[in-house]
Length: 144
Ligand code: ACO
Image 1: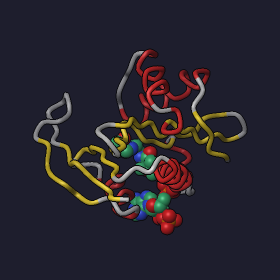
Image 2: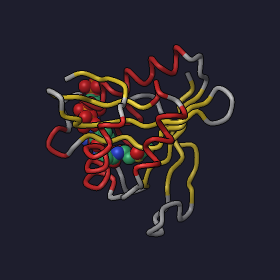
Image 3: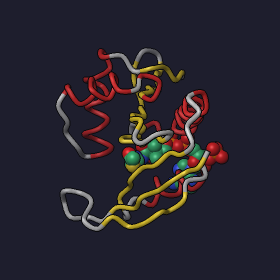
């Protein structure tokens, strides 16, 4: 397994991970926009030519990154793939001299919240009805 930058050919595989793991459907243009925004911040976990996970982020305010999507395909979790992607992402943030990373996560998503805490993210507030189905979100932050 290796972590590499996203390429547009990854879109069908990534869109299927997004449907399965994040239960969302986005247009192709969204992935291309994220890619244009900050190439080093869009990473793919590649297992023998097949994307099995990805992390997509953007640069928001000065010195800050925001993780928009992060997921590993169901059958490939708890094997260190998320860890490798997060480590590569943290390196990209350090190379860029970023000071802070933020993200939002569903309050019911205990697994992801545990993962993020493991990497030094802290709960930084509740976002009422953040998701389209009405669920609240947590804002989480990590200072670098
Ligand atoms: N409980 C406790 N610790 C855990 C758990 C868990 N459920 N899952 C992972 N960990 C720990 C592991 O022990 C491991 O520790 P180590 O680094 O000391 O070895 C570390 O976290 C990394 O685990 P990985 O196996 O690398 O994690 P994985 O590949 O399973 O990816 C992820 C984690 C991406 C959160 C995965 O569970 C997933 O895809 N979930 C569904 C999608 C999702 O909810 N994404 C986040 C939404 S929020 C957003 O997108 C901004």
